[in-house]
Image (cartoon, rainbow, N blue to C red; front, side, top):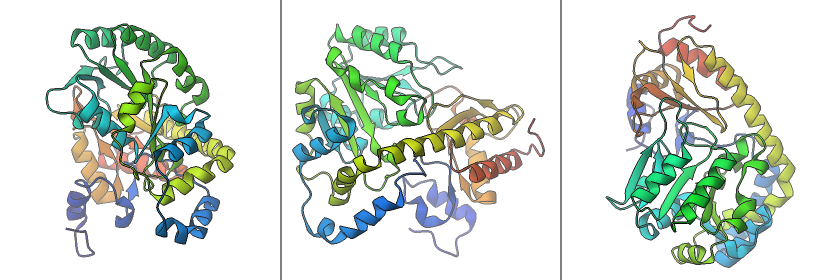
Length: 371
């Protein structure tokens, strides 16, 4: 079934809320998916268009060459890198095939748990209501359940909160003593302040159990190209994941993007600054809504709890779409207390963010309820 012009807005919502992408085809403002609106620049598209015949007609390169292309971007040796058809492909390999027992803090990105066989995932609740990760308690629980893979997303999705680097280093050390691999998902780190000082990519030599996952789709604004990578100094783990990907897992357009990306390093840095500026202004506006609890964001989206007395989050999301043609995510499907009171809102341009806040106030029935 596809939406068509004679569908009501309510019927369209029912269709859209069951999808996992393709939103651009349906003519609404997407504050749900999390990507960089300011990258790639038009020059990148022009180069892809110039190469379109070769990219369509020819086989792309395979894993060893792809790893070299990513290595040039992140200044890492190719043997440490496995390139995936989005990070989701690599998550499926690790969660679904390599991990015996996986532990993940919740709420978090659901795919790590969803990709694992039944009974092989332990969900560790974040501190409530702060949603902070106590790494010492997390490590103790990982050891208690005999986990061989632990996953931490930083900044976390949906909370948008960064885990301090010293905490992650301490966690890696604790887990290493017991043979537990630590996956640190840094997919949204480029939107935080000083990401180069926060990333663990330069610390791999010191921690043989440390693995970094990175979805390039979010930060680089290329969700349709599907590129992600895994990075580790643990050659045995890297080889095990590498053996799980098929020979041509990345298409020619994604390969060409990796080839030309180094030419646009400054444009990328500038784009992330613009995202942070828009996000911070959205945060201030959301904080001004009376009764709303807003968590200070480190990524390009904002996690918040609805004011007491207003409708639950799924109802607010539906009403926002039907009345204002805007789509945000509720957290009702997350593993957390009071999940149906929480929203995750992706930041867009300043104008779109202002319109969203006005629309939210309307559907919550607060009138002029902003402070």
